[in-house]
Image (cartoon, rainbow, N blue to C red; front, side):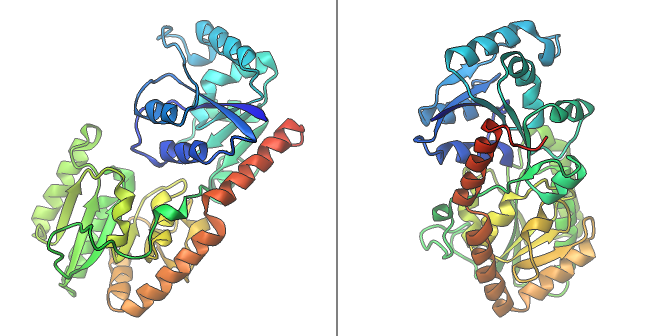
Length: 367
């Protein structure tokens, strides 16, 4: 049994990083790993993790103006926690989380792992990642670009039982179901998710194909993106496609409505992994994604269509190909489900995580 302290400074489940950590903790084999969780926030993420009966340690933030790496009250309290609970490994959920754990780990000779989920990269990250026992990249692109191929690629995995391949007859996005083919973009409404490109592509598709509905699934009242959201609504009005392009608003556990879609679009300008891509494929839905970052590991010609980012014409063309061929959609969807079963399950991910823990403890992990 090994004692692992997981550290993540995220408040909410509004991005893939927090959800990926939660799934990792939920599926831990408690015969192998005894988990602990630390964060500067005691918010939604911490509360859900506490429900898994994982002890929680809140890192003090009293030293507001001191960089966390050198905030000595934090360092002292984390060192004490490491000793009290005989922590064997510290697993940081994102690079910046290591700003809190790096010095305590060094001072206690505790092995340290950084899980690189954030698409951003900082100068301080380059320093931290050089002096840890292992760096996990969630895509080959990230390993190559940010970690100079010195990381270990472990793709995110999902629990397939949460992703049915059949539509739920009791759950419709809209009542009554209007019989239109449904194209959806699920994700936070932010510029890098490229909802603007999706809307422009929708207008081009609607010039040629009218029995289709375009859905933007996400919180369209998110205070951090209000200006962008308003700009999207104004593009829709200008293009006069208000009837065909709809915002669903915030839907809790929004991936549960994926089976309602016929085509899933992930037009992101950058995407470190792309949970929605594997979630859509798990529901046997064909995916159109941009040929950037994580999607290059996930989408094959059998399971979807890759297009360049920032190209509404290419996106519209790909959507039309799938709208015009229900058979192609079916075949791609089935191939997508098979690919997820083979490479992107939570069990597959967990086996790779355990293997890494064993290697780190044996002192054999790559630096």
